[in-house]
Length: 265
Image 1 (cartoon, one colour):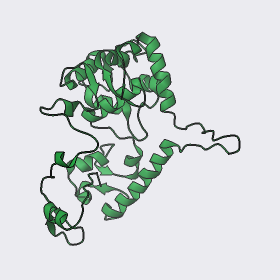
Image 2 (cartoon, rainbow, N blue to C red; image 1 turned 180 degrees about the vertical axis):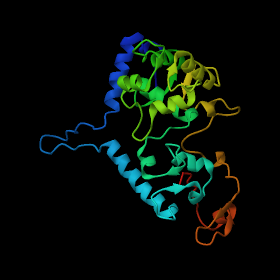
Image 3 (cartoon, helix red, strand yellow; image 1 turned 60 degrees about the horizontal axis):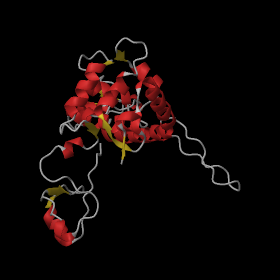
C-alpha cells in the first residue's frame, strides 16, 4: 500500500510534480510496450475508446429492455427500477435516459469516490491513503488565477482528466465538497469535507475509512481458515425462469454455491 507522505508535496513545486505524474497516468493513449527488437511493439488499448464501446453496448441493451415505444429515450415509467437507479442513468438530469447520457462521464458517490480519486491523484496509481493536511493544501493550490477557488478548467489544466475513463473527477469532488453550489471549490470547502470524512480522526483520507471507523474487529481479507468462517445470513433467492423463491440454506445443501454481488441495470 502506497501512502502519500506529508513532506512529498511542498507548495507549487510539489503540485507541478504531482500534476505531471497525473497527466502521464491519465493520458488517453498509452505508449507502445517494447517486447524486443524481434517483435513489433504492442500498443495498450485506449481506455476511453474502450469505455465508449462499453457504454454503446450498455445503451443498446438498455434500449432493447426498457425503450418500449422505440422513440430512442427511456422514461422513468418505462425504466421501472426505482427513482435512484433512474437518476443514476439520467446523467444530464433532463428526465429521460438517452444514448447521450451514457456518453457523459459519471459522478461517483462522494463518500466513496473522493477517497478513491485523491490519494491516487496526488500519491500515485496505487496509493490508498493520504494525509489530509497536505492533501487539502495541494488541492486548493490548483487555484491558478488567485481568486480563492478551484474551477474545473484549473483542475483539468493541472491534472488532466484526473480520473479513470468514464468518471468525472471534478464533478465527484463538487458533489461532496461544493457546499455553496457555485461549481467551484474553495480552500475551506475542501478542508471541511476532508475533516468531516476523517471519522477515526487519524488525519488520513483512507479508501476504507468507513470500515476502519466501525466498532469491533477490522475486516479480514484473503484466506479464512475453516474454523474462522461464518455462515452467510439466510435469504430468499428468486429464480429468473419462474420467479419461485428458494432459501439460500436450501440451495447450499444441494450443491456448492457462490454469491456474486454486482450492479445489473
